[in-house]
Length: 95
Image (cartoon, rainbow, N blue to C red; front, side):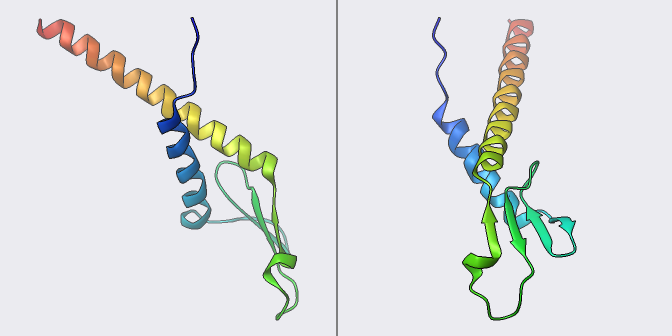
């Protein structure tokens, strides 16, 4: 039996990962670094001198971004599976 990736869950997990970067508080790594993203910090901002280019003072960790997307995907998948089982059990009790 072949199981495929549910694209809707993947899209939702990507959106949640990106929104969590802006909505949730940052993690202070050191005096000059702050990491954004939940559950793993994937976007890091360095406190450099004022007037620097923003690209020079940020870092995107693609591996942690991937782990965040996968973590949210599995969380949504399991919640959906539990909801479907609960709904089926409820329908069986009614009939």
